[in-house]
Amino acid sequence: TTISWQQGTLEIKGLTTSITALNALETSLRQDASFHLNQRGATQQDAQGRWQFEYQLTRKVSDEHVL
Image (tube, rainbow, N blue to C red):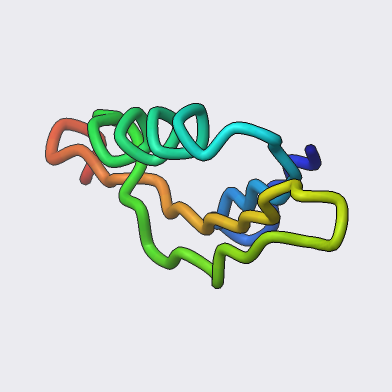
């Protein structure tokens, strides 16, 4: 799994053997108060049976930080 941050976008890419764990990750990302799930890449199973996933999130801007 890789996590990168560039120009206000958090990107998470990786592999998992458990679709249940992947569903739990996506649910958690959707409920995060600090980030908005901006884009979800295609989820596919590779030849070894692992699930490939990709998520892009953007940081939510709180009204209290706006000048």
